[in-house]
Length: 326
Length: 105
Image 1: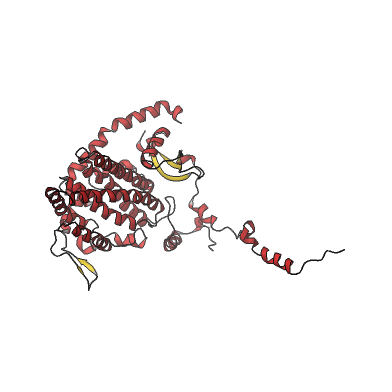
Image 2 (image 1 turned 120 degrees about the vertical axis):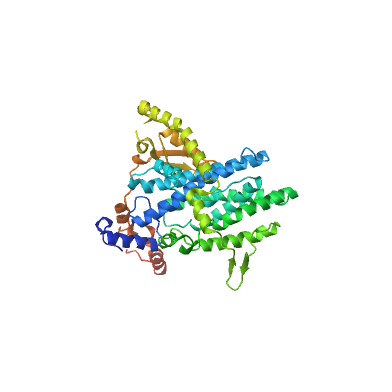
C-alpha cells in the first residue's frame, strides 16, 4: 500500500504514479493530474470525434425532406438528432479538458470554421442519391461503430462514459442502415443500380476512414501515443481489416461489386489485400479541401450565426432577471 | 458577459424506475437551470422513459480532489466494521455444539 500522500509527490513521481494507474486499467477523471501529452492527445482525439458527429449529421440531414416514406423520414430525423446529441456529449468532455488552457466551446467552433479543427474524411463527400443515404447509414456508421466500440475501455473515464451511451444509440443506426440497404438491394433494377453507384462513390472513403497504416503514408501518426496511454487498443490497420472481414461478404451477398479488382483475402498472410488508397487525396480532404468541405462548414457557420439571437436573448434575460433564475 | 460566464456547468441525474437510486447521467452547459433541464431532456431522454430528472450546478457540488481520492485508498483495514471481520463465528458455534457447556450450580 502506498504511503506517500499524492500532493507531496514530485512531477516525475506523479508521472510514474499516473502510468502505474494506466497499467492497472484505472480510469482518469477530468480533475486528475495528467501529463500534457495525454491531455493533448485526448483533446485532439475527442474534439475530432465530436465535431465529426456534428458534421456527419449534415450529409444525412439533406435527405430528411426527400425521404421516400414517413417511417424513413422519422428514422433519419431521429438519427440526425442522435448524431448532434453525440456531438454535444463529446464537446462537453473536451470543454473540461481545454479549461486549463482558458479555452471554451466557442474556440472549438472557431477552429472548425477556420479549418484548424479537422473532421472525418467521409463527411467532406457529397451524398447525391438515396443510395448514398443507405451506404452512409450502413457502412460509414458500421465503420464508426467498430472504432467506437474499440475505445469503450479507454483510460479516460468521461470519454468512456460518453462512448457507452453513443454505442447504445449506434446499434439503432446500424439496423437503420441495414434496413435501407436491404430495401434497395431487393428492389427494382434502378434501385440496385443506385446502391451500386453509391458504393462506387464511397468505397475509397470507407477504406481511408480508419486512417493510414503507419507514419509512412501521411508523415505522422498519433496512434502510438494513443496506444501507450490506452486511449485505444487497436491500430488503424487492425480496424480496417476487421471492417473488411465483417462487411465484404455481406456486400457480395447482396450482389454488389466492390470497385477494387485487387481486393481479396490472402490466406497465407491471414489478411485482406486491397489497392492502396490515395493518401495524398485523403490528406487534402481532411484538411478541408474535399468536394463538400466549404459548403458544409458554411452551413454550420450560418446556423451558428443565425441562432446568435437566441443566445443574446438568454444573456439579456439572465442579466435582467438573475435573481429569479438563481 | 463573456462566453465562459454565460454558460454554466450542470450535472445531470436521473432515476430510471421506481425503487432505483438517482444515477449520474452526464454533464452539460447551459445559461440557466430551465435551459439545463430542457437540454438534459433533449440530450439524454429521447428514447427511454424516466421517473425523475435533476440538474445541479456543478459549482454547488462539493467534489473530491485527487489528493482526497488518493488518501481514501490509504484507509486502514476496516474488517472490524464489516461482516468479513467476523467469519470465525460459525466455528465457535460448532464448538459449543460439540461440548455443551455445563452451567455451574
